[in-house]
Image (cartoon, rainbow, N blue to C red; front, side, top):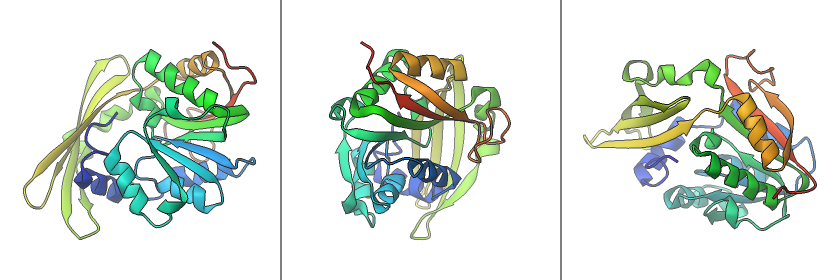
Length: 251
């Protein structure tokens, strides 16, 4: 879990400036429209960009995040009143109450420990109706995205809504195989420096498949890019997973 990004209001503003609507959002909205899904979960909703769009498309959306500053920003956005915002985790969701669940923006990478990841999947499985869909993205470790997490390659400027310019860059350190501790650093116009860090795990495709099966899902599709390319054939370097809740939840 990112320590600062969704807790400090200034970093929430930076996040929104750096992460506008993109191809990934278009993809998730298209997948949502493939099947009837009146009641939807957005787990790790952040500042609510996708949750608000899903609600605007007519879905009943419950958006869940542990960070109060992110949820406060989400509630203030146009359309925010149309979403049920919940501060917490998947374990707080009512059983057999939802048709689809989404974890976007690489939220899945934040669950480093296998037991924690299994708990998240099982919590979502309990919340979904049988045959409900779970849709999420995670970076493909074979593409080594961490190669760009250094000050030279990651340095950038971020322009906030009020015109303030923030200098930003990334630093990273491998702490275990396919597990990286990442720190995002920000320097504001007023000279204040803020940092935001997280430990992220990049699971392989077999690891993702095994964990989903153990938690009571069957994998429907895994894409490698936002154009629905096969794994390994896209420059996006993604695992984009669509899984189905099996009729019986495993113990």
